[in-house]
Image 1 (cartoon, rainbow, N blue to C red):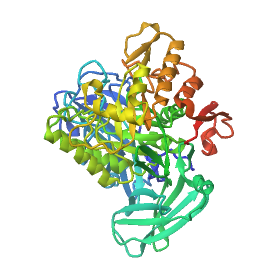
Image 2 (image 1 turned 90 degrees about the vertical axis):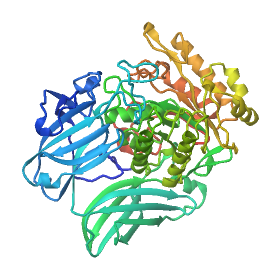
Image 3 (image 1 turned 135 degrees about the vertical axis):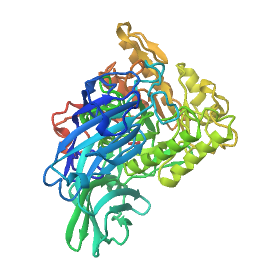
Image 4 (image 1 turned 45 degrees about the vertical axis):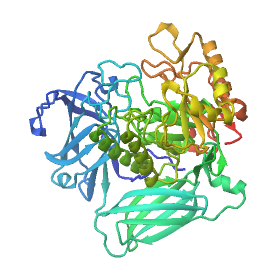
Length: 619
């Protein structure tokens, strides 16, 4: 696997430039200005950090519904030739973008990317002034906002707001006709890799696309297809390796995160006019009966809830910090993460692909059910699916959580129809992954029955989920948070049951303020309490997996296995052993200079501390 530093490693070109750094900035609390020529910039901000964060250089958590940014970029001669694209990873919530005073893009949705073509403005001179207006009403509960608080101070389970630019901004030079998108899929049944290529710009005669796949530098496939329409979809047949020992070497899993490098060339005749590097993987996920399947085999999910916040930078992290979190998930013995109420930076998904972490991707919720909220969530969820569908690490989609945004599911047919509609829409976009319609309770459409149960009585958990029979009774009778687990009209058909939130044990030294669902009084007690709870869960044979709350402390929530600064609250190897339970087949300390991730490439191994991974029989 080739190391990538690109903001979108699934579509990487050689010629790009990160525009992160100091930008001009100002607040426009009265929404007075409508055009860049009117704006008075009075301070600077470090992009891509939100102004609420300390790392931005501002650190103002007050209510500011409109903000403005400005940056003058000196262009290289190469950037002034061909086409020049200006990319935004995410701007919260409604963005307008000008280049040299011309409106070049508008986008609504705080978690998904958009692009402006600024070719005309770039060719007009040696510099281009980029101005961004971001409108983000802090009190609007009808937009997808996830864990962003609408009150002045973070309270309960909600955290500081994020306004404006919070993911990477970058320039990218492309030719007149270029590869706009490459989408990957895989089929173990036919041993094929699916590729869908979208071409932007004019389509001259004799245009073709060439796709090459490599495994650890060895060429697996070299296919070429004519381009007569903007979209080309093909299946690339690979040689079936035969017996399991050879097949497993090519399959992606947490124990063996084998990725296939890809090079996609756009040609006119024999001339390459555009080239992108990408990657994919051969892997299969499904549910069968009461089991989750990975690559055709039952696979037990050991996941952790990941909020994706950092104390100084809120929802934004450096690439090293994103990688570190993925490493910590592995070191704590988990094989997956449920990214909670956040669409994370694609770089985090890249590290999950590379290092082998399964991901449940969950849409940030609005908190009201209105026609506007329905339109906003549906539109942005479609953009999420489009952005991330090719990541092999993603094994489930979650459009709703705990009935947020659909609070009257038991009594309002429209709310139930909306959850069913998003479930089926997601299956239409991607039939290859399970979909959890509404995670936690009040299920009306789902491939996996998920339960949020924060009971700290280990024997009660064993009684509820110890056997398939007791679990089935719990689905009928148990009401965590006074919510029915299934609603009328939904038929339980033996789907896998996952305890997708539980635990939440707080350990709060030095009498700091904060809370958890239960509390330990010392580091020793914390480790014992966690070990006892996980032992109970591993005794619950009615479950197909779990998701522990949570990876890190997050502001007032002190129920992480790690502090906010990512220091562990107890010995990490002992925590990992508890996470693994009796399913542990072996543990090994791996020399980081040789290969800390088993089959991951050597470029990952430079100057890393020794890493302990606990492997399971299922892995």
